[in-house]
Length: 307
Image (cartoon, rainbow, N blue to C red):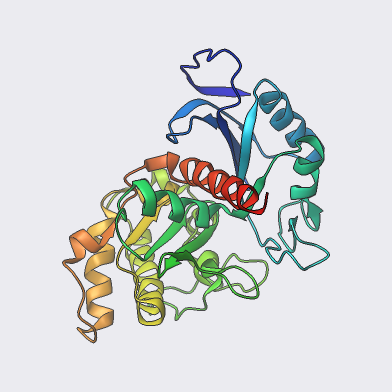
């Protein structure tokens, strides 16, 4: 278990904390925050098997008295409270985690309100409340890393329906110079299959972070991300687009994406200045963690209203 921050102050044991579980396919980030959504303590550890990973989650949270917990999980997940598999991770390709009752495991340990959404929806909630979409009624958050996922807020509410958005599996047109068949085990040449970190590595035989700024990979990457953003804009018309994740740490990608996006959209709709419209997360790697704190508070408020 790796401690990322360590500025915990004893508050006399008062039950004044929110818990956050950002469950990623590569790593879990667990955090304790105060009622202002400030991070008090945060730890990170690899995602292995459910038993091993949850043991570390419980070891961390057992130290604290918490008001509520927010969970933002990799997916797909079941978010329908009427479903018999509500709280499950469902058809993930992640070994050991398919059809796993994640929410049930945490609820059986802690008898407190627990919010449950996708990790990218948690990040969207964090950015809309305290980040680069603060004060707006809508935003799109897309994370591009080991996988690709998207969360959205529309008219002030997290976007969901029968299930949650799976924006990373949007089908795309291949770039004319790209003959890669795709890396997604379900759909091959979807956005995740073409533009995720593992897709870049499989196509070129080298990790994305080791590629030079002029490498052909970034031309493909900008094309696929811009193509996806065009589709999202035409469907939900967000007031802000926020791109996070490990691949987007390549800052030279942003102007390339904006340029390709403008070309593809062809001025069909009016949008703000693209430098202000397509941006990185203000909260950085903490977007989902802070979003989970906010989710925890919302869940607590829902329970209080029923009492």
